[in-house]
Length: 302
Image (cartoon, rainbow, N blue to C red; front, side, top):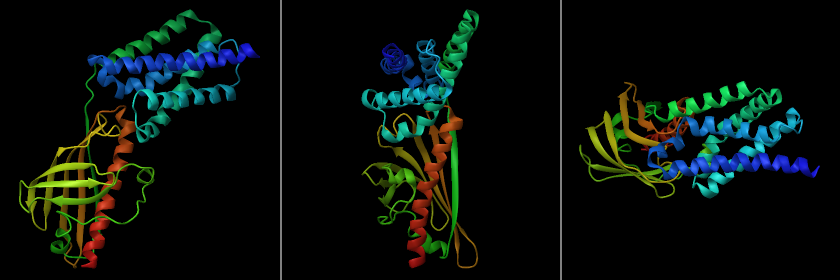
């Protein structure tokens, strides 16, 4: 029994030491620095962790339920170590956790099949394929940009709405979006240096972070467009996403109401994009809606 638990712990320790070493090394070597946030880190590395653990557990006759349970524990340890030693933020780790758990479990099942058959040729092929995919991904161009657009109807004229677009007073309403409730910064106020093209603008978030902006289109009652010139260097944001541009468009509906459209352009540095863009779109949309609902309340009150 003691030997069994030593083998279980050995699989957990070995997989996490190897993963932590690779992640730490990638942060120290300039050519590998960007790899931490790309496809390999959140898919190939968890797969490899699962395979390493499966090799350590190959003689235990582990049942499916136990394999899944220990793999979840394996992923949880990896997430904890990333927080303690690699400086990853809590929200970031929460977002990547489904990938880590999913691929650690997948790697463990793949490894169990590989080592149960003791097929050397299969093992060599699998590891060679993982290595080739890692190399190909490492030197691939990782560039992804997207646009998120949302609109609401406000029962006020474009002129009234415009007064609350360029700058607006502090948002007092409690957060409704669950990530904001967990501590992700949410927008609370916007200030402006002047009401003209080229003026500086600031979007202030709940923890004091400030996005510095420059107005590039200023058409009262119609279009406010601004480029992002400075962003907070928070661990949850830095190296993950850059907000490039924001825009508010106002359309007179001809019945005393206005359609307000909010748009944001952003660039992702974290891959696979199909997964992380789901989160980026959701977060951006909820930033939009928090600001736009505040503008609606102010405009309709006036």
